[in-house]
Image (cartoon, rainbow, N blue to C red; front, side, top):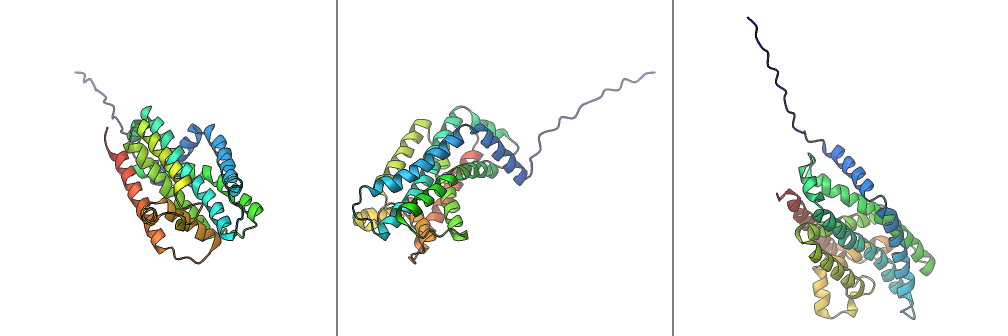
Length: 259
């Protein structure tokens, strides 16, 4: 009597990787996806910082130390806004339209690793532009710029906040709306936000409004971190942290949402 042994194969489902391993893999993947864009973008960011410092200075006949500090820190802040709230959401919106976001949802990786991997890549790409902007400010105005742990923390915190806002926009809005909103943010930040000029030049209602938006508080934090003027920053810190937490939460919910 013979017995036929029927062998069955066990199907193994993909197992989630550790958080740090997932994050490093996603960072490498993002760097490969943007390997042609990142060098060009870094060069453009550096030119943008130099253009703001040298170009806007031509519009001011007599630049005192306060105006020089606003122009210098404003150039770095605008560069961070351009990365997080303009370039990153536009590229993310295009990737979402192409189905990349749906594919990332299927990966056995934590959703937070997906967000923080892209945030790290865009922050890394923006750092050379900030460094060039600091050198340009030192040469143009002869400013004493503080570069220490507090400065690094302010810049990285600003980058995280702006990238989180950009992802929240890109994940929840269609591509056309994302492009429109990002352009409004950039124009508003360059012309109507007290980043490159003191807030006293705006109407009182506009000053009050900007206290509750993230851009002016982040500009104030970066300026204080780099020049140490001694201005109180508690309200600016509360506003920036609130926007960072809210934007990250909204973006994280979008990644967890099923199509």
